[in-house]
Length: 67
Image 1 (cartoon, helix red, strand yellow):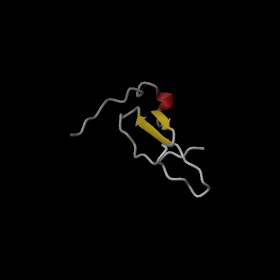
Image 2 (cartoon, one colour):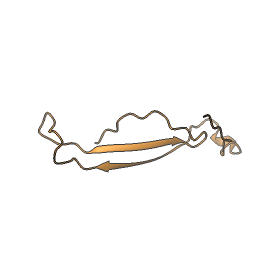
Image 3 (cartoon, one colour):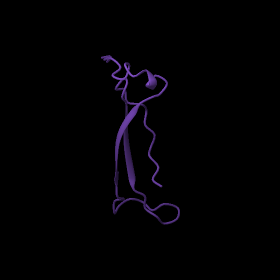
């Protein structure tokens, strides 16, 4: 099913050359059973959910890197 929406930012001409995204994300601490990395460290898991605010499409996601 394809769903299209009007661009809610169309009336703001100064925004025409910009992509507009929103997002949400969160981190989970490493679990006790998670394997250790090469340096003996456990890594948290991060999730990020972006959305294109012009079209409400969700762009493809890549795994988030925790820094």
